[in-house]
Image (cartoon, rainbow, N blue to C red):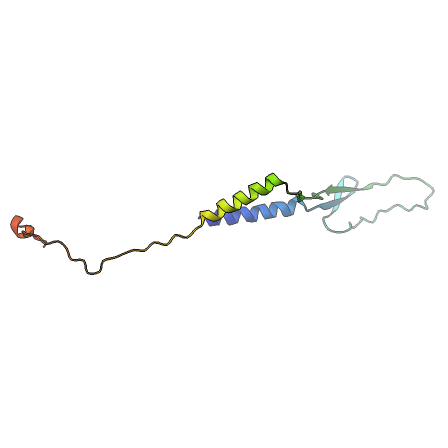
Length: 134
């Protein structure tokens, strides 16, 4: 059960890191007040009401595009290796020796007596108390 929860937690954290670095863009095309097209991955299709730039009469363009950009992380935390000082080296050596001694295999010899006879009884208690297993 503990391994199951550990696996679920590790998968969840992996997806969290993946989606926190993931960035994407949502583009929306409106024609007037109506939403005509939404694009998550590519270019939008226009509604065909593009105004020509050659026209002398200036008209307002009824179409508008909205772009929503969701930025992910650019940099993840990276640890730099620092120069090891004498104090850190002493701590590291003490840690390695103490950790190594935790897992020393001890050998024990079990002496089992195969030909061990039970002690002699002077009285037969079952007959004496008349208690018999049925």
